[in-house]
Image (cartoon, rainbow, N blue to C red; front, side):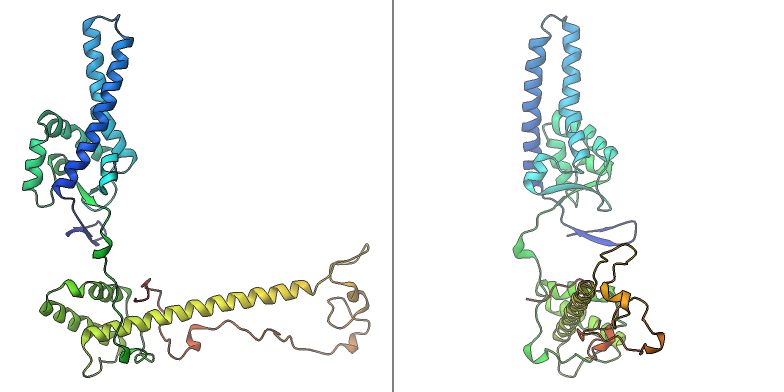
Length: 334
């Protein structure tokens, strides 16, 4: 992994492309570019046979620059760093801060690539890539770019492991409202990669994260519970609360829609001039109508009763869910 720091001081972990995959992508792009150059040259030779030799030489140089140099620059600019060869190999050109490249980046890469790839048959580019820690050639160094891998094998993708069964539901009363999102993200990243860490390093990280989590919740980890299992159980509790909150919100929305639908079905439309769309009983002051009653003294105050019996539930209605922060976006553990 290669850690890059953006302008907002956010560390990004990008996987730089290896030399074989980059060479294969360049080879595919060169084959396509040379094929297009040969086709255009044949067409121009056939159509400009009446021109003098100097004009033909100038035209051939212009075609070389437009097809073999300008073509890759235009493709990388329009595709934001993904040429056909890189797209086939799952690669992409990005800036040093991880952002998409622009025309000036593609221009510098293409201009220097003409020398280190076309004129030296790729020897200079290979040497520069082997010497560079990130596998960058001279065009990448001067342009401030990096070729990274976009497709990562699924087997290497981490998942949040579930806690032991005897810890499920044990932290339902824990106050998680003061835990920042940054700590949740750090805990999730540790849980997804703890199998790849050295045991001592992983144990130290788990202890530190558990201490930070206990400091924000106000309750230390139970005695005899490993730090990693404690973190996994708290993350699972957080996910369960998020799922319950989403379910309650959907139920409240559905109940409100049903109430609105029932109210709309109880209203009629006027049938004659001067009548409003409130039903025929409104003109006679019938009970339950919106029109003026026949005798104002006969009006009896009544309370409006919600026949559905459903009401929107507030986040604090659930005693086990005291966190009111934004969702972390964690997927439920497998």
